[in-house]
Amino acid sequence: MTNSRISGFYNMTLDERRSQLLDAAAQTPENLLPFTTGGLSSDAADHMIENVIGLYSLPLGIALNFRVNGRDVLVPMTLEEPSVVAGASFMAKLARAGGGFTATTTDPLMIGQMQVINVTNLEEAKFKLYEHKAELLTEADSIDPILKKFGGGARDLEVRMIESSPIGPFLVVHLI
Image (cartoon, rainbow, N blue to C red; front, side, top):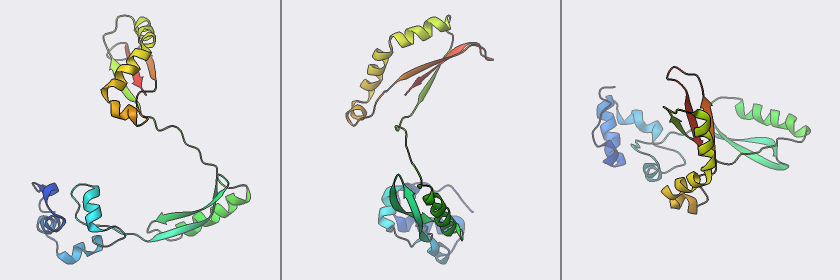
């Protein structure tokens, strides 16, 4: 590659980005052809992610024999490796004889982690955080009311004590 820094790349049209890529990478238009076809239009791709220069396509196959949670399903698979779809279909057939697959999920939760240092009394600080847990969760929710409106927001608070570390004792607070 001749130059990986192209100022304003994200503001360019798809054609302009391709032209810049040709210049920066010392390539020919023919070398970009494999990236310009597929099930997704260039315009749609250009609005999905930054710095779009084209598309990349792979074969799409359907794995058969899957039974998931009591329902038969066809599993689309996009890959370039031979025999994977056939292998998955065969294993699904074997699993099907025993009832198939059971799938479960957990709630879509994230954890924000805070490290609280220079704490004189870890036990007391931990107790105080739990004592004010409802207030802290309410305060966290007030930061982004739209998130709360759509079913998100603070769910829980966990506190861990780290009693021995190179920087001394501290608390780790997880906002879930």
